[in-house]
Image (cartoon, rainbow, N blue to C red):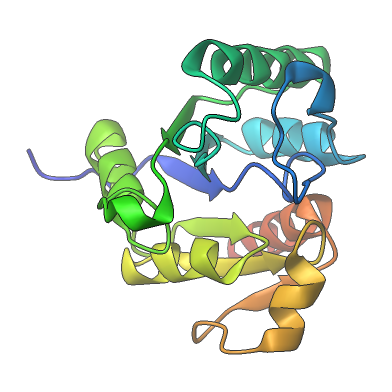
Length: 190
């Protein structure tokens, strides 16, 4: 099946982009706290015709910090928060493996993004990919996405380390990326 280019898709990392991150992992629904403005930003994307997909490494499963039931409960809280803000997250893709498992789905490898492309039948060329860590941006860049770094979560440290993929733009947070995307799209529609 040939990928269709008509679907507007955007790929977001979870921790540090949508919700506050923790060096100790987000291990329960109580620890999942949205970054102010992130749910409203997703709603604005939906209103502009974007399908929003989350791609997140969740090695806490492989490390035994939480299980699939807990991860599903965390994601249910995220979906509920989105709905309360008038937003919809179309799908959540996650890698449950540890770094030494050498899987294809753990970012910075692009396997999870290729799975998204296949599931949504889209070509990832120029699809916005928003993350707060270098591995988020690398995975998206290799898959053909346009990388956007947010300074929330690990974003400040990521920017300071450098080595960002070519074409990466830097924004304060998810809401600022959405402002940029929607202004760019309205400008190109004229």
